[in-house]
Image (tube, rainbow, N blue to C red; front, side, top):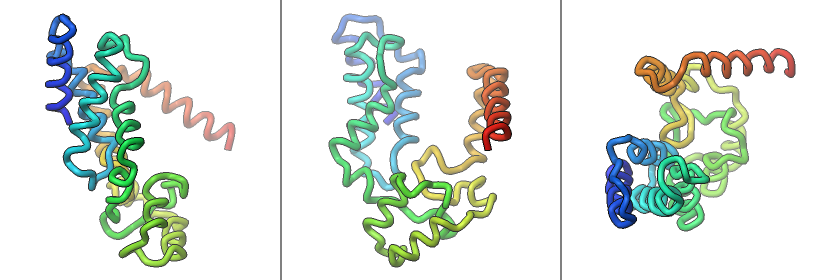
Length: 190
């Protein structure tokens, strides 16, 4: 995904007669974000196609970095979901430890896929019962829940966030303001 984004960005910038700016990291970020937004069992050719769409159609054709009206990685995901919905939804794996999260709402992709194709997960009634159980906090923290590659482990998300704060990409005041607002509103509007 990342390599495809870098190659497509360089090729498009050359074709459009622009300065090649692959060293700015935006293509790498697009490829990484797209990869983290895909299901774990996705065929390997889908990230390549989604990355090419993201860079060519959602980023470069609108003028490049700062001129695109939509997030290229999410545009790539939307394109893949619209073009190959079965490939994007059929290969969900059971979370580690066999737990299913009640936090993952019944309308989201993972539970709907399980209910549509129960396979090894049991009857639809058993799946619904598992979805409604309150998961252990450690299962949520360590990523033993269903979901996309980049959304399941709170621990890894926290480590990534701390890394971005340490290297100066993210300002800690924005994070503190966001979390403080969330906590305040959670208490005020239960």
